Image (tube, rainbow, N blue to C red; front, side, top):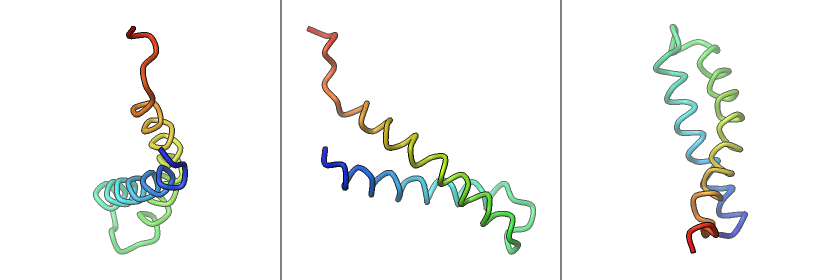
Length: 64
């Protein structure tokens, strides 16, 4: 899979999940805390999704 497409998919999914979790868990949804938590979660989730999607779509060489 093209790395640009993979990066875009990872960022979009991480943004959606990170900010959704932060606004649900955050005590004050109108404050700055959910935004900061959303940015941090997004930054953590982008590499997780990037490498997870790569691993999901690579052919499995051990099943011959």
